[in-house]
Structures are given as C-alpha cells and as structure tokens.
Amino acid sequence: MKYSLPQISDVEISQLKVFKAVVTNGGFSAAQLELGLSRSTISGKMTELETRLGLSLCRRGRGGFFLTTDGQRIFEQTEDLFSALESFRIQAGELRGQITGVLRLGVVDQLSDHPDCHLDRALAAFGRTAPDVHIKLTVIPPNQIVQALLFGQIEAAITITPAAHHQAAIKSHMLFREDIFLYCGDTHPFFDQSDQKISLNKIADTPYAQRDYDSTMPYDSVFSHPASASAAQMEGLLHLILAGRYIGFLPSSLADLWVAKNRMKRIRADLMSFSANIHLAYTEQALSLRMVQLFRKSVVDAHKGTAK
Image (cartoon, rainbow, N blue to C red; front, side, top):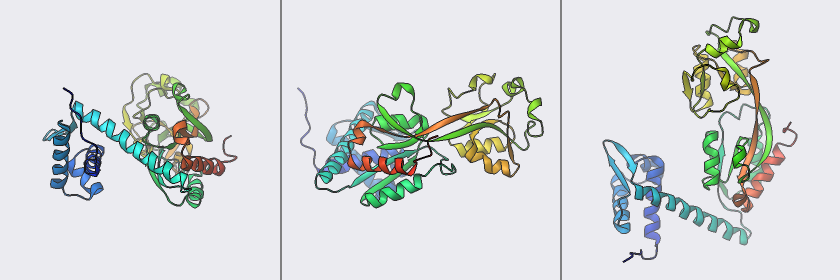
C-alpha cells in the first residue's frame, strides 16, 4: 500500500526552508544566523518535518552533520521545489510588467583587478533597469560554476570558457581575455636568475602550487611531479607563491602589483604563458526570464570593445 502525503501547506514550506538552510550551512548551529532562529527551534522544525515525511533526513553528533540517503533525495527535491516556486513568482510578475525576483550570479575570483572587467558598470546599469531585482553574487570556483548553472542554482555566471562537452547546454558570450604567466616570489632561487639560466628541466623539477581544481591546465605536462601545494582561491595561490617555496601560474592582472613592488617576477614568459577567455555564461532556460535577458544586455553593453 502506497502512502501519500497530504497537500503541502505553508507549514511544510516553512519546515523545508529550515531544512534547506541547515543543509546549505552544514548544520543546525551554522544555520541560526541565516534563519534568525534558535538552535532548539531549528531542531524542533527538523523533527516535525521528519515526522511529517516519515523519514530520517540527517544524522548529527560528535562526528558532525551529514544527510542520510533519503535526506539527500529530499534535499534535491526541495531545491527543485523552491527553484520552481521562484521561477513561478518571477514569471507571474513579468506578466504584470514587473521585473522582480532574485538574480543569482556566480563569479570566478580576482576579476576586479582586471582592467577590462566592467562588471561594476554592468551591475549599475542593470540596477537602473531592474531596481526591484535582488542580486545575490557569489564567488565560485570555475569547476563548480558549470554544475551550478546546469542545476539551476544560479542564473548567470562570469567565468572561464565552458568545457566543450558543456557548450551545447551552456550558452556564453566572450567578454575579455585574461593573460596568465608563471611566477616566483622574491625569495625563490629563480628570482635572481636570468631566464636564460632557467631551463624547462629546472622548472619541471621545481615545487609548484596550483588551484585545487586544476587538473588540465596548459603546461601541466611540464612538471615532473604533482603539485606541492594548492589553494581554493586565487589569493591563496598568490600567498603560496610569495612565500618563496613554490612557483605557480597567476593572471597578470593580479600579479602585476607584486611585480612592480619587486616581490615577484615572471618566469620564462616566452614559453610559460597562456590566455583564458572570460565569458558571461547562462542556460537557455535561465535566458527565458526577462531579468536574465536584461542582465545579459547590461553585461554585453558594458564590455563592448574588450573581447579582443
């Protein structure tokens, strides 16, 4: 005999919001700030939801917080539910001529230093066009942005070129180019050596640092061993290189300041450099929303002449 739940009411929606916040924040205590509720209230709502569903959704204790198999499935369905509700609210508002809702934007880190990045102008123009839209901007690693777009967790992104196997599902518009070079810090042995004395064999045997997600970066094959250090953010990688123990690739827009201070230098720029194209990315489904169409226009207009 199949058991079906009664119709979902505001009570269940409220409980699911608590559940979503708990999972997103990684636990009851961490969710308190977002929800504005006490830990005991959050615990009570979670218990009520589990009783309502007849399922155990999570485990919590000294080992930390984690979802059960049923909890993971309910969380995925919860995200789909709130995404559908938000989409309904936005499109209903558009039918009345209102541009409202939340525009979730993912951006890779350290773009603000680039002279061709005019995201600030785009956001200002979009704010004038759609003043009632709430912008939620999150800095996300490039390897997570594609998934966030495909799963509807964000509507648009400023990121590197999507991988070829994702380009059918994700549409993009090139905005500008980022030049990337190999660097060392001022206390590294390479710093006082001329490029002529730094051979590819020397580079291959030198400890290097990379981003956590870098698995297919150009010139990875040069190195004869795995990375000795890694960082999730570009700024973390900068600190590792400045420490003098590692060499690593950085965008010139971030490194130039440190080069000017004589704290860092490029290594074999004639051989160890490449470019990454920065794009505005979105899905066709997201582009069906009027606010995403307006945001796309604002971004493209702000970057006219920078896609070289």
